[in-house]
Image 1 (cartoon, rainbow, N blue to C red):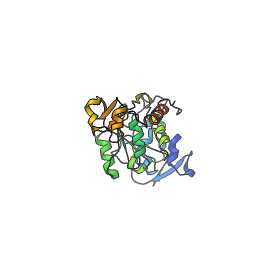
Image 2 (cartoon, rainbow, N blue to C red; image 1 turned 120 degrees about the horizontal axis):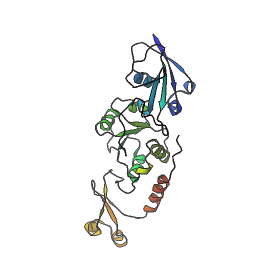
Image 3 (cartoon, helix red, strand yellow; image 1 turned 180 degrees about the vertical axis):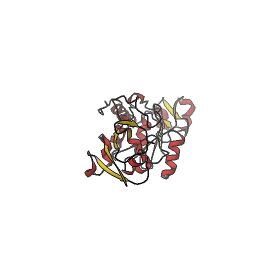
Image 4 (cartoon, rainbow, N blue to C red; image 1 turned 90 degrees about the horizontal axis):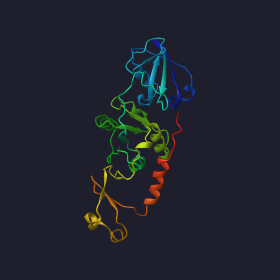
Length: 252
């Protein structure tokens, strides 16, 4: 049986048991294994890893780990240019498109409010189906299930560390540097379709009497036909938009 040493840095320690954090780990293995496989055997999803260094040399996920190798694993960098290093995955198109797992409906609604293309399946999908959609449509997987992020079909993803919806959104905005891409009131909160300004006369027959009397500006979802206007909930939602739009990234 061979053995290699692993050291995980920064927020990657979130995925390790407390007794294994912030220290060098001796990890035994038998058959030849890629560094990606061994990282995930230690329960760290590959989507959370930005750089891998073996014996002082940057490597890709497909490198086979040898006996006595020293493996250093680094999280996503936010202020360090690592472009000269081997890229572990294709670059992420900006702004990215997202898919959320079955338990993140509130987060999906907030992300759509800010204008991000956010797929949240209406019917329950299993992990294999979610991963396939993420792959086929080049979407970033957001989930609290690290096992879902370890699937080979998932290229880009993020494991949310909290159940608080606004904290989740804050983390996503910082992780993917999305603040400059916020475009509120451009996505349907219900189905993710695009919103388009529509003349009142065109949809007047669909409005309730009080809405028809007091409002003149409307947007319509081009996918499901839902109509939006600046009604009683608009002020509260606008405050949410402004709060996230004005955030300053504090992640190094």
